[in-house]
Structures are given as C-alpha cells and as structure tokens.
Amino acid sequence: MPLINGKALKLAVFDMDGLLLDSEKIYFEKWRETANILGYEMTHSQWCGLMGTNEESEKRYLRSLYGDDCPVGDFRRIRLGLINEYADRHGFPLKKGVRELIAFLGENGVRSVVATSSERARAEKLLSKAGITELFSAITCGNEVMLGKPDPALFLKAAEKAGAEPNECAVFEDSENGIIAAKNAGMIPIFVPDMQPPTEYVKKTAVIINSLDEFISLVK
Image 1 (cartoon, rainbow, N blue to C red):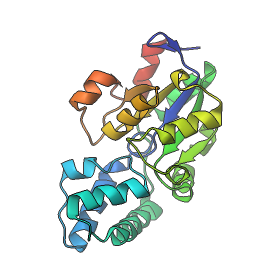
Image 2 (image 1 turned 90 degrees about the horizontal axis):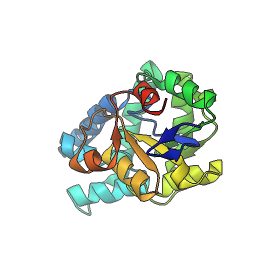
Image 3 (image 1 turned 30 degrees about the vertical axis):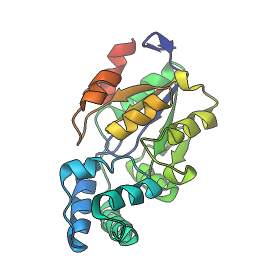
Image 4 (image 1 turned 135 degrees about the vertical axis):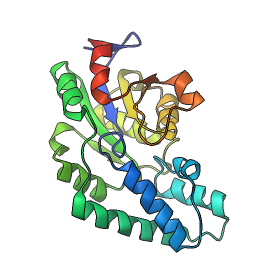
C-alpha cells in the first residue's frame, strides 16, 4: 500500500468541483452574475470563502457578507439555475491526471471516493456526464451533513461509509476550506491549486501538487 507522510494510505477522498471537474471558473462567473442580478457585488476573495460550503454554510457566509436581510434563497435559486443551464449544454471537462491517479491507487489497494458539498442529484449528474462515476466506490454529498467545509463532518462521513480510519485517508482538495476540513478530520490534506492559490495556512498544512497525477511520484 502507498505511504504518505509515513502512513499507509487506504482511502483517497476527492472533492469534485475544481479538483475532478474543471468547473470553478464557471462557478465564479455565475456567482458574480447572480450577485449583480440581486444588486450586490462579489469579489474573487469573497467568492473563495464560499468554496466547498454546503447550503447551510453558504447561507451563513452570505449573511456575513451582505447582512441578515440578504435574500439567500434567491442567491441559491438563481445561481443554480445559471450553472445547471451551462452544465446541461456543455458539461465540465476533467482536470489533468484524474483517471491516471485513480487507476494507480486502485492497482495499489487504495479505494477512491468523492466527498462534495453539492447535493446528490447534481453531483451524480455531473460525474455521470464526465464519464467517471464508475471510478468511485461511494459519493458523500453536502446534504448528508449539517455543516459544510471547513467543518470536517463531510470527510468524516465519507471515511465512515468506507470503513476507514481518518489517519488512513488522504483528501484531495483545491480550496483552503477543504484543507482546513481535512486537517480537522485528522486526514492527510493534499492541495491541488485551481482558482485559489495556496494560502499561508495551506502552505504550512498540506502537501501541494500541481496536478493529480503528480501525486503518483510522491508515493512510488
């Protein structure tokens, strides 16, 4: 079994958006469009705080940005409508190294699962459209836990489903929220930059690689 930081790796936990699927650029665009429709502005740094959040955490964050009277339901309805329209027309391409890494892990006795803040119907649809559903033994979704990232509940739920101990799991993430969640879950955080560059916290906490297939050389 591959070793990472001296620990035997048994389970690889993958975020979906921006990590498996090249989708975050479109999400940022649709978040800004939604904010403009509702009379708000959203900067890139503000949007980064939303990366990896589930519906409940999203509501809390939006209220912290725009006040308690922020129409969080309208934010979600309009944004998801815009994103779903785009996804139905175009889908999202895979990020570099997805198939190569999962094949390598499988050959070395490591199972792969998805842990995404998205709701199940949407996650299954996007993974199916990308043709990678069969690569994963389980999918854990944001509506299965009360709080989204940076809370560790999503990753702990994924490990529990797989019958793995947290210290046997590596989490592949593209956001600081995800890395904080992985660290708080007692798992090994692996950061693959996408729309958010490594923060100081990420630099101190995570293994940083440029693409998923780069991980193979770390554990061979």
